[in-house]
Structure formats: C-alpha cells, structure tokens
Length: 173
Image 1 (spheres, one colour):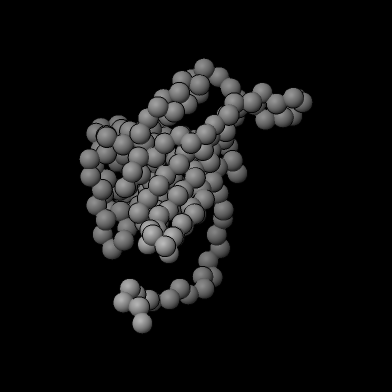
Image 2: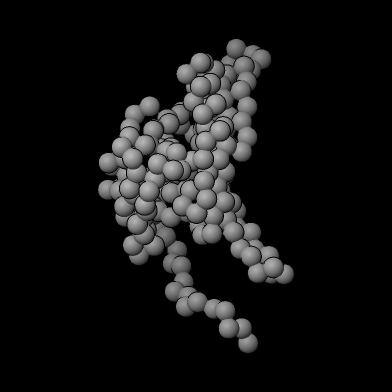
C-alpha cells in the first residue's frame, strides 16, 4: 500500500463554451518581480518594479501554450515544462531589438488566453527564449516575421492569475 496520496476531489465535465489560443502576453525581467501571493491556488497579487511588465501583442491564432508533465518513477521527480509560442508579423528593427533582449533575459511571463484567463510562468525559475527564427517567406502571400518559443520549467502546473492582480502591471509596448 502506498503512503503517497493526496485527497482527490474529481473533475466535473464542463459545459462552458471555450476557445483555444492566446490573446497577448506580458513580459518582465525575473528580478523585477519581488513577490507573488498565492491564495487558494490562484495568484492574487504580484509585486514588481514600476512598469516592469511590457505587453506583447500579435495577430489572432498565432500564439499558444503547451505544458508537458514529466514524471520519472525511478528518480521520483516530477516537473512541468511549458512552451509559449509567439509569432510576430513583419521583420523590422524594433522587433529585432526586443527579440535580442528576450534572448539574453531571465523572464516572467503572464499569458492571457482567448477565454480571458491569465496564466503565470516563471514562478519557480526564470522563463527563457528557447528558440526562434526570422523568415521572409518566398511567395507574396507567405509569412514574413519572427517565430519564438519561450520556455518555462516549474515545480507545478502554471498558476491562474486574478485579473485584478494583472491590471496594475500592464504597460503598452
């Protein structure tokens, strides 16, 4: 008999209408976030330096988040790896400079999904740029711009963030 079990409560089937994808992200330097308050498994407050978070917007249906759960029975380890995939249309200097900063930064990311829910990445360890590419396309109708993947390793699944906690953090790019 195992001694490692938590009290399960079950998951009910939802009847809500929902939508995939993400709407926007807010990114700050990891060191600029000094405290995160978690109440009842939801982030209710974020303390950061003034104007630490910057908004990154992109076209509809070009951003996503995938979180993979990795568990190793032999070592007893479990961790969560999230990939935040973003696409920014049109190659241009201002975007090139921002991507250069993302490439060297230790980051915190708040994602707003298309259901209006905010998710926090970078609670345990800094988020970092995993990979990216700039492309011009070939034909007139091809994509021109940048594709980026930001990566987060965490001890737990991403936390939801109350909208009130995000309101004071947003700064337009």
